[in-house]
Image 1 (cartoon, rainbow, N blue to C red):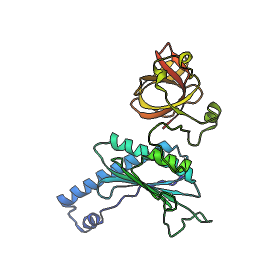
Image 2 (cartoon, rainbow, N blue to C red):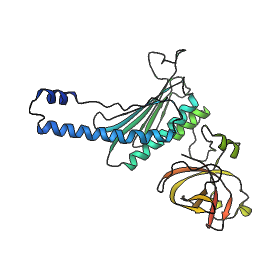
Image 3 (cartoon, helix red, strand yellow):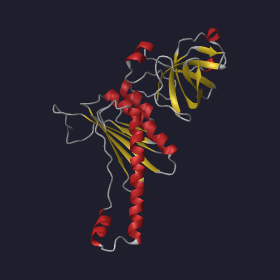
Image 4 (cartoon, helix red, strand yellow):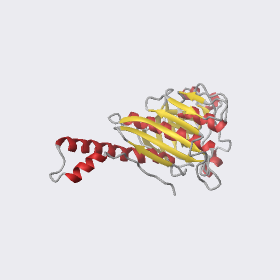
Length: 292
């Protein structure tokens, strides 16, 4: 069962003064306590929002700390539970979510999220005096560092979470410089494997936003595209959402694979199977496969 904890630094002298003063806390001490309680509430609010996108798939440990008012996250991953490839998947999911939360909760102070990967011994414990073998730190401003001492390229700076995902899953010596790379779904379900056996998705071709499938010849092509969910509605018996992208509106329906928890206003990357131009909705459409 996944371990999950929230570690909070306590201001010890406040509690000491509280215990020793029969008349309670001074105004200054009360203000410090209120500030600490506010930080604690913020950490308790953010922690489950980070955990949720993992869908309890990976056995990892997440710690949310606020030692001085800035939200910092530490993710520990052991090789006995997760391999190097899935470590990259965790970075891709949680790293992107951390940046989203920093944007959504603009009134909170976000610091950074750091991912530690440990190789374990035969007993499943950390090796080499608990020194992590891979470390990736992502700051809320988007800057980052990546350190894998045994790799050919030991340090990579300012790489987005998905860049590190490609590095770790493909073990490539070159990272994609743009979003033109073919992508796959991490840990696809049986339904996703049956629906898209190749597990290969191309960046969306903008031609589908102005032509029919018979004109562009791209019907049944698996695509992915980033955008915003604008509204939900039903078309026939299918739940559908209108997805706003840089190229125009796209209509995604729940056909074989059900929608997970999605809401209007979510900024996500949707993976779908292009089905052609919908005359009913007046735009390109296709069934939902996955999102991140």
